[in-house]
Image (cartoon, rainbow, N blue to C red; front, side, top):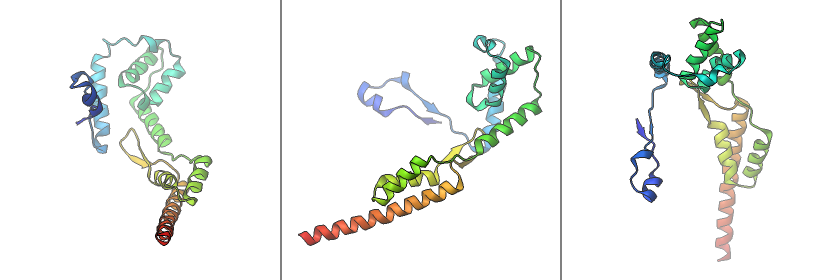
Length: 189
């Protein structure tokens, strides 16, 4: 567990226990086990929980909750499954596992970087801007964590290569312009 409370609040408003925020960190290999524990815990209380607003959802919307399990709470997921079953649409554990695998494949797919960001990043790199170096670093190194705990690169290999070049060009031009600036300022003295 990590205390994620804002230090700024305490500095300005004094010690407030009501604003405590904690993050529970789990290892990637433990994600599936934690998911099972959360489902078991929610399943035990499912009868007591009202899922009134989900009753108004169409079958397609409830099926989307089953598919995009990572975007919904465990209770909403289990309630959706229960409501669908009451409407005559039962899903086996294997069918849900297949949906989950399909969703992970969809999330695993890298994104293309927008052409505007590539242009802006290269333009900034060529004029010696640190912003181009930062954009290049983000494009070449950014990863996303899947609901399974696996980390994958956010952008396509081609875009990551462009990001590396953007970063290199920016560094070379920034260093060269800094040296040139120092030489010019020292010669003026």
